[in-house]
Length: 277
Ligand code: PAF
Image 1: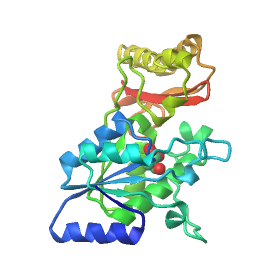
Image 2 (image 1 turned 135 degrees about the vertical axis):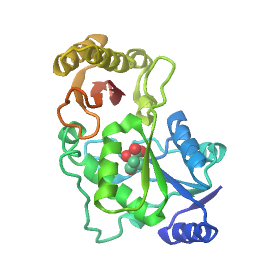
Image 3 (image 1 turned 90 degrees about the vertical axis):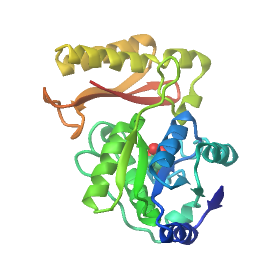
């Protein structure tokens, strides 16, 4: 498994593969890999001849109050997982390689990037869309894999790639969960043992809301009930629970695919999750 840290080295490896007609997959990550990421790498390895995994804790998607400085970093552990799951190349640039002195450009996906997460973390999708656009242009993969755990992120990236005519297939991979239903996330390690026992309540609540909606309940009422359930379970604050159109993330319309999405605070962790109706 080779690790490259410059865009020039990344491009030269990709050019070598392309000469031999290889199909290339990219799995963008911020490191601190877990079984969820392992499934993304596997998904890429099944769809492409060569898989690049990027590890870059992207500063522009964190606000000054957020956990950029303390975000977990463990490259040796990440490399073990990438090698085991069939990755071929790791792109792990320094911040200045990605955002050179004088970098001025931001990518913003209007509408999709401004609702839900965008309302609570207005910087977030601008940072994500900017860095993912850069990674896609740097690596020029045929396919790029993102987890459905960050469902809105997946929607934003799909729209961004389409709007910017980046010739890549964006694939969403199913959320990987712990046995009790908690979606795997690098931030789960912020939970104390007591909080960890409460954490699956967010998945339980949105799953119940999704079943009620599927059974004919009003989506807004079902979402409001889920807020109550998450708070009664012991979460301190709910940023949102919302049933939305699965494609546009606008208000849902009966007969079209719907998604229930949620974000809530438990101790130091802000957990997000979503399920299909
Ligand atoms: O989902 C993540 O880990 C990040 O938001 C991503 C897509 C790697 C961009 O920094």
